[in-house]
Length: 510
Image (cartoon, rainbow, N blue to C red):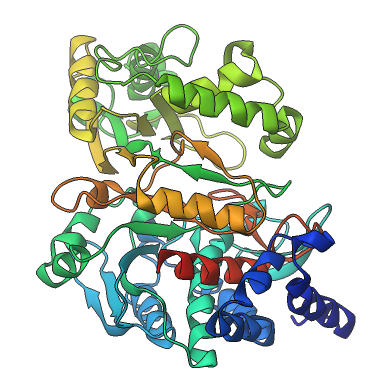
């Protein structure tokens, strides 16, 4: 899986040549070494990164080969044990598994004797995958050429979140290799159920030893591959909350339809639990098939502020709509909205989404049955000041009101939205670091996706929370997920540049 000698030489020359800085038209990572001229320790740490490229890549590939999938109960306890070993190898001490009512968390810390202590959030689990949908085997982490990007590592978890997390761990290992102390103390908290909406992560945080260490922290961040295909970066000020659930329609619960699958000819005389579920789903949205119709759903949804709307307008002006559509594989925004209005919806609108529908026979050919049960997998995305508990209650009340009280509502996970002030030191440090790296970061109201940052931003911790990291990748939850390793675009960082960005960020935090 190693690159050829010419590529190795080119990569090393690129990283080592960054001392000339952006004035010579080099990549943003070039600023790292230029700044490090004022700091011998930083120079020594950065010098380790190209030397460790092969082992850093191998670590990522080996981690991808061991998927922890909470929904399938796959690779437990191997997954958390492997995460614990990675943490120990990176220099964390007191590393231990934190038991919960579900999958265990992982905890560790690094006491560098620094003035500042920062919390780091990791997830070691990944989403499910269907190998047949991939162009490259999802667990082999092969190096693949991507037009316009360069060499990527393709595999489940490559960008969400093992690629960025491995790059952060690689940065810590560069400190070890250089024999230098970190400029900040670190508290690491990991979970193994993020991909099922973190139903037990709050138990990890509430563990007395963990909570005590987190109370010493000034903020928390999650490593990310924050660059788009053109090299731009956003600094998100929060994230939507989420509720994940199943709606189950069955003949047993309904009291109508069959208690087991029967011949489809009986549809003439017997009710269908599947159609019952479809009718229930139709009530959840307006006739446009999109806008949530649950009574009171928008009551607590906080409108965007003028400042947030301005962030969106500035982002729209700097981002190519056609490129985004191409990456997503879409031709139209909902209701044929224009680019700016579509982004306004993305940031302000809570949603009700059908993740999947399962009922009856779905194999080759036909099987003439009338199924006794049908299931819809649903997620609802929440904006401030909505809460997971209140939104779930409103969904249940809506179903009951419309004659579907028999449908089971089983919430599998979820949490409230998060929001961090743009003036917080955490956010300002991220902005300053990106600018130092020659980038023009754009503030963004919130991620349209979700992560369980509420455990940090809510009481009792009330910490600022955010994401940071150069590098690029995409395909989270989808086939052909990838993380950029060797970039052909000088504006976008590959593996070494991503690692270097974390070194710079740690010094900035210190």
